[in-house]
Image (tube, rainbow, N blue to C red):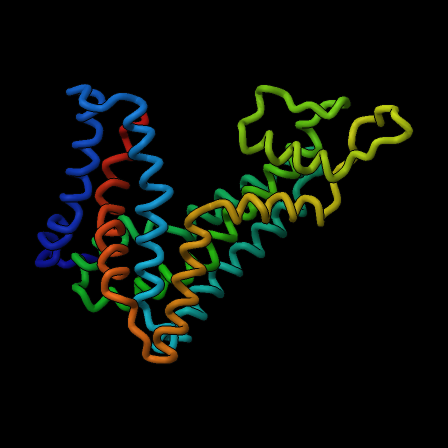
Length: 275
């Protein structure tokens, strides 16, 4: 519970975030200072550069050898426990609803265990409990960025790849135009791996793809996400840097810090500009 004396620090921490969000909304809705193409560019910059570099900065500056194993084990256990319960629930659902189980599993798991720690969590807890919470929060961010976010993204891509491969492809191998671009790519990749030409004649509609084909399609799409590369590169660098006492060159560190420093503000700014 937040003490009354800490309420002002919470307001001080949260007000700038909502100020950035309000400014973004006003820039589009009220003042028309940004065009749709400019809004798309800002969102693209946040997702491709700002957030990945912030993830890299947090992971690379965290000492993995000084992390609290009991704290991390408790956090991991509660996530794995909930995920197991959700998969059991999905497995026991009636067969007609089985196809819609995985989206619910991913959504419930994300909402229950993966808060927006970087953008909202760090400023909020720093205002509530002071800067001493940064060490524990960074450790949570490390696990979320390196493991849990990638797991959720992989589940989403697995779901899209399997759905597109089993339902998105027509008997002639074409993909319906109504499918999103990501599902089109997944469907084409899965279809190309499944359908074989037989003596110059077209084959019947493709059967459900094998687990290996679906995992391959999902894995390839996961590898295209910049934040995936940033999380693993940050983790690898932290293991090397703190293990051998190596410091990142200042020119690189300053470059990463400058760009990553824009992530929180632009993330809040861009929440409403695409509405």
